[in-house]
Amino acid sequence: MKKIAVCGKGGSGKSTIVALFARAFCERGRRVLVVDSDESNAGLYRILGFDQPPVPLLELAGGKKQVQKAMRSSFSSGAEEPYISVLQRERIRTEDIPPPHILHSDRLALVAVGKIHQALEGCACPMGVLTREFLKRLELDEDELAIVDMEAGVEHFGRGVETSLDAVVAVVEPSLESVLLAVRIKELAAGSGTRFEGALMNKASDEAIRARLASELETRHLPLLAVVRYHSGIARASLTGDLPERGDWNREISAAMDALNAKPA
Image 1 (tube, helix red, strand yellow):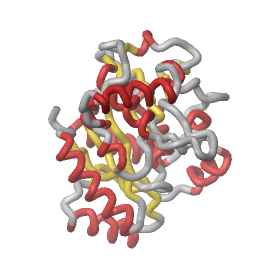
Image 2 (cartoon, rainbow, N blue to C red):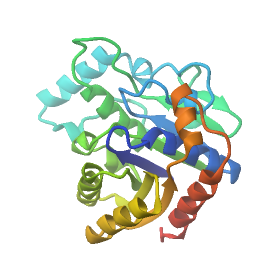
Image 3 (tube, one colour):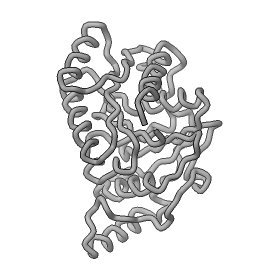
């Protein structure tokens, strides 16, 4: 398993889970490339310990207008969005990405596809297409892993992003909306030919809520990977935009990693 998408509703703690996963995999000796594919999330780089964000890959591809031009050309030739190509390079390795489009810290690296910066900028479709094409062409070494922080919701499935990935994890918080979205994520993952690994329960504050949420997942045939309980340390770190210090959640994230590794390839 090389490329994992972390999906979920807005506010479910998706980006924090991505950062905790990244740190934990690095501590296990893996090299981790975090791909920030959420055009509205402005703070993932801070959670990962960087002082500034990387220059978006969208700029490396010529900017939003150039990508839109390539998309229009493909549309004119009859191609549908999930099959549009906007990159010329067939294979991309981590070392092919030039600074400042990639940031490094020991075993961790970060790239960002693109962000919405101003009103009336238009849709995020070029970013979704670029995400899919970048991930499809990305080649990772044996000790490398890519973890993708997806945009909230399921629109990325419509752009075919998951066809470039190996696995999907849904972060579920204690709300029916979050559970129902996880059901949809599972269905769409199956439709894209990508393996749905299961739901990671997050921010469940007490045993009664955890039991009820686990029951809701079981009723809907959503396998539970692991539970990351509500932790005040994570909440405090979220207020400052930092990665939380080590705590009980490290064992919980480790359990999720073990569950992923136990699944057959």
